[in-house]
Image (tube, rainbow, N blue to C red; front, side):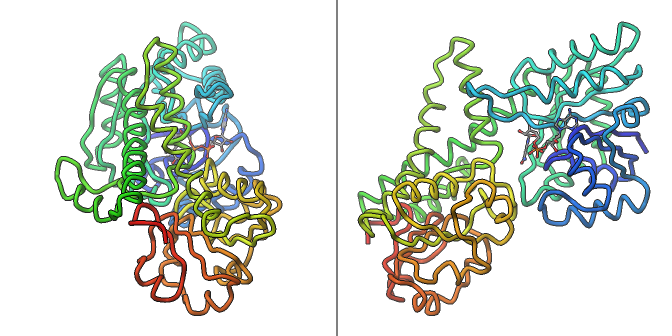
Length: 434
Ligand code: NAD
């Protein structure tokens, strides 16, 4: 059993804290947002993540997991201190390190010798050195410690299984022995462990996310070409993905990537590269294609309906992907804002993200079910491919709608079936326009 402290309890921090407690360690989570803290202390998770709240509650009851806003409680006895605070998009596109710096200062004030500070937040190359300097300044010369970079690869919606069964664990450090101590902490997970230097570990995270985003933009570009030339991008992706050198993942054409990671991380890497005098032209194209995918989707609605002034548009799905309530950089926000700007009235439904979406989209009407969205709608747009949208009663939906128009931004439905049901249906990259 080890004493672990986790600083910041968002999607990454809470998952890390809860899962290490579940592995039998004693975990203290530090959270400065007092509203979140109150929820956490009452056994509730402030975020929607399948299975997380149950595991949190169980480990709190077992006395292995606690929450505080007091660094004096969490830091001094901790052998391993994880930094899991946010690194949002800064105004100039670089990663905003305000929270990381603040966490490092607070950790430094209470740190004792022998601890390892593990940076799990996604941070620009060189941040590990900066964190070390800040902590050293606040801890004083007598306190000996190490900084290890341990980028996080979990996916919202499957965070628990990603924690317990990671593809790999990346550890970067100046002191290899410190990295090996962190490796030992992860030993029970049985995952391959890659030990490297601090800067390389930091870069592995950005390169991984940028590569996944590139795959999405690549297939979206192919989708656009398919649409013009009468090919079906889903079949193209299936054919490509069967090649072991390519693999099937992240080849789903749609309205583009969103979420709290890809948009900000691709932009931050672009910024890092440009600041270092490089010319990151591929990253620029990836971002351009992604923003075009959203615009093209709205254009399709206009192509079918004409002027959108006064039209009622129903939107199915708001979160940036299924199984999360995360609305950060969700394509739905850009799409809906663009529809509103063109004079449309928008109704929307999402199984879990509506509370968060209401803050971002105050003029949208949120409904209780997918069917309510369809009522009097001139078009129905599928933006997030939640499971519950896979088996809708389309006859019922068609009766409710003013016009049977479905624009599918995730290729969730079969074009032939939808057209047989009498819908004007348009997916992404699946042959010609309807
Ligand atoms: P988040 O915004 O959901 O959570 C961050 C938490 O840290 C918040 O609760 C905030 O109140 C708290 N916090 C901020 N400053 C603090 C401080 N000084 N002391 C204590 N608590 C503080 O962020 P997230 O989505 O969990 O992401 C965290 C980091 O992990 C980011 O760098 C992100 O890029 C990276 N990451 C996220 C994911 C993901 O899927 N969300 C996946 C991999 C990596």
